[in-house]
Length: 375
Image (cartoon, rainbow, N blue to C red; front, side, top):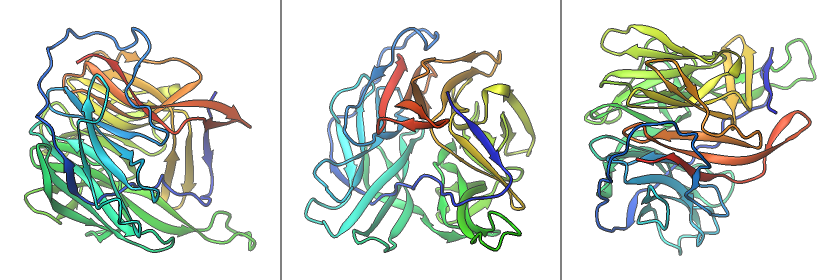
C-alpha cells in the first residue's frame, strides 16, 4: 500500500508548509465542562466518529484539560485569501463553540493564519500566528505565542520566527509540545543548500528544509531557546509521565526515545521495527500515539538523515507492556497529527482517504478530524 524510500542524495524537497498565526479573539462562549470519566479500553471497537466536515483541511487537533473539547486549525469559509483560525469544539463533535482569529473579512490584502495549537494541563494554549501580504512572494511575520484558553487575547509572544539560535539559524519550527509547567519543546527547522547529485554538472543545488534538533523554551523567559542535547535530527516531541520528561522520534529511525531532561539520560522505549519510521508523537497516561510508516522519504546527505513525510498508519503503544494497537486497519485510509486525550482514553487524528498511484500514496481528501474512544 505504501512506500518508504531512502535515497543517497538530497533532492528538491520541503517540509509541509507551516501554518502560522495572528492572534485576536473572535468570540467566546461559556467554559467547557468536564465530562464523566470512562473505563479504559481499546480504541479499535468500531468506526471512528467524524468530527469535522469542511471542504478544506481541518488540522492539528489538541485536547483541552478535562477532555471535554478539542482545539484545531481550520480555514475560514468567508476568507478567500486562505486565512486560518483556531476553533474549539466539543469532543463529541458539532459546531465550533469558540474561535480565535485574526483580522476581519475586509482585510483581503493580507493572509493571517493560526496553527499548531497545543494546550497544557493548566489551560495554557500555545500556537503559531502569522500575517503576510496576500501578494505572492512576500514574507511576513510569524510568532510562537501563549495565552490562556479562557482568555486568548491578548497573547504573549514567546519567540519570533525565524531567529538566530546559539548554534543555528532557524527558518521555522515544528509543532510545539508542553513538557512541563510553563515550558515548551519543538523541532528547530533549518535550511541548507545541497547538491542532489555530486559529480553531475547538470544538477543544480537545491534548498531543503529539515528538522535539525529539539529546542526548549520557558514561557517565563520569552525569546530564549536552548538545544536539548542528544536530539540531532529529531522529528517530533511530546511530553512524558512527569514534567521534564520527553519522548521523541529521530529521522530514519524506527524507535521512540525517552529523555529525562534533568539528568540527560536517554533510552529507547519502543521499536516499531518493520512497521516503519514513527513521527508526530502524542503522550498521555502511559500511552503514546504515533504515525508510523506510510509516506516517508529519507535523504541521506553529508549533513545527516533528512526526512520528509506525509500520512501514515496510526498506532497507539502501551509503554508499560509494549503492546501496539491499530485503531483503524483499513488499507484505504491514513492519518496524521494524532492527539491523545488527557486520560489516554480518547484519540483524535486527521484522517485521509488514500489510493496508490505508481507506488506512491495519493490523498483523496483534504483531511478531516476523527475521534476514537471516549473520554
